[in-house]
Structures are given as C-alpha cells and as structure tokens.
Image (cartoon, rainbow, N blue to C red; front, top):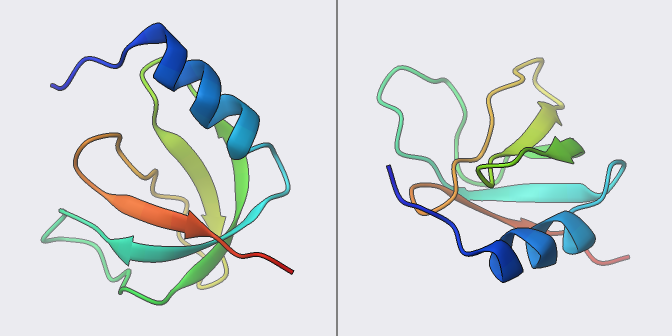
Amino acid sequence: MIRIHPEMLKTLKNYYTPGTRVILVQINDPYTKLQPGDKGTVLGVDDIGTIHVNWDCGSSLGVVYGEDSCKKIED
C-alpha cells in the first residue's frame, strides 16, 4: 500500500468534497465493471486517501490513492 503524506491527504479532502462530481480516468481492478469515462458523485475521502464515490452506474467502489485516478468535473 502506498502511504499518503498528510499534506496530500488534506489537499485531496479539500478538493474532493462530498457532492463533487468526478469522471473515472483509470482503475486497477480486474473485477469491476467500471470503465474510464464513468461519472459519479463523491461521498468523501478517508484517512488513507481513498475517494469514495457513488457511481452513476450503481457501483460504490472507491478510487484508491496511488493506484486509480479520477478527475473533478468542472461546471
């Protein structure tokens, strides 16, 4: 597991606040049906940097810091 620096964790929590809309860029999970381009709503960021997302497709798989990536959808 990749450790997250406290300042980076603070940045993630401030950037990906609950309610933020995101789009999946990449996910390292061979068993998920999530695909790059899927969209969802952030539920929160936990203390190890996982961004918990309620995906529009019904999944609730988290975006793991250092393994997966998503980006904020700007209005």
